[in-house]
Amino acid sequence: MKTAMTYSAHARAIAVMGLPLVGGHLGQVAIGVTDTVMMGWYSVEALAAVTLASTYFLVLLIFGSGFAWGVMPMVATFEAEGDETSLRRATRMGLWLSLGFALLALPLMIWSRPVMALMGQDPALAEMVGQYLAIAGWGIIPALLVMVLKSYLAALERTQVVFWITILSAVANVLANYAFIFGNWGAPELGIRGAAIASLGSNSVALLAVVIYVFKVLPQHQIFVRLWRPDWEMLARVFRLGLPIGFTGLSEVGLFAASAVMMGWLGTVALAAHGIALQLASITFMVHLGISNVATIRAGNAFGRRDPGHLARGAITSTAMSVFVAALTIAGFILWPEPLIDLFMQENEPARDQILAVGVGLLAMAALFQLVDGTQAVALGLLRGVQDTKIPMILAVISYWVVGIPASYLLGFVLGLEGIGVWLGLVIGLGVAAILLNARFWGPYMKSLRQQEV
View (tube, helix red, strand yellow):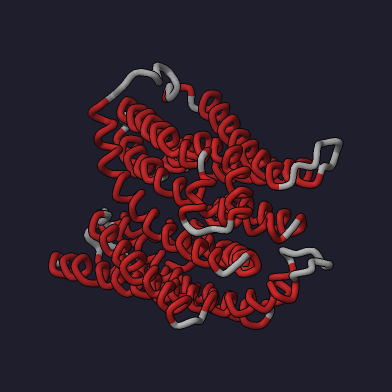
């Protein structure tokens, strides 16, 4: 049935549905933020190394997460159909694919030092990155398995437990960081290796918690019964749906990974400032990501009803809310850059003035890309809602890799703008993505739906 919700009604519905999703995303990013803050308190060199190592880890994690994200719509469909057998099969094969990817990625974690050296990083920095990832890299196994089970639970509308498990993991990370980085509560002072132990521990705690919950609360689904048994037909279905999603995520996170590598070429101070600015931008981006998730759900409902009016109003409202959040963020980054950057450093940090000098300029660029990043995220969410994933993957690769990365290098190094130029390249790549993805949504799909409207 077609509806005629007002824009204000759409905004209320998006806010109500989006707040717990935003909370869950913020809980997840809190793990990276606490690592950055605490390593900044420890030393600038350690902060720079964790910034690079975390970006490297994130690239592989996001790529492998496509299978987990592919599980979500499949489980939701099977649950609506009352098909518990297929629900179980899809979740199990999502776990299989995620574990397989994690095992393939693990050697790249353990032997990351030579990879850093090949990318032109300083030998001392590459050594610290290698120390961190030799321990923290093992966390990709529990991290990807947790993402599959979170997708399974979210598809069953059990979003509150997903939120609380994320918070539990973040708290465990803070406590372990405090103990092992600085040597508190009788623990040894391990510095960057302590942060790696904390990261691995928090991912393991999250996996244990979600497995216990599924085992105790949802025994009827028997997710872990005969988990060892292969199901090649379902594995192929999850693979076909999840792979384009993984490549789309990889293309965007690869843009930011390339920027971290380029900032590393500019030195430890520039990389540390980049890490701080990126963490601040990541926090605010979680709001846009929550809006994007809601846009996917509501667009899918309207698309299924062939209701272009409802779909268009929901899309406009989602985009407008994202722009409003971006406006608030821009004001904060422009008006209070130094207090925000200071949160990530000790008061007596010797390189404080240098980091502030670089970081203030980077936050100005971060303010610019908040607008385009939020807009492209919402457009991507809308396209997933109308079940379009392959073409957006191609558009994302073009925007981020063909446009964004070359622009960062050209502006940063050829034209000599250094860090500002690298980040301006990010803005350009994300801006192109916002234009192309919105054109994809508002063009073919809205046009075809309006033609079908009676």
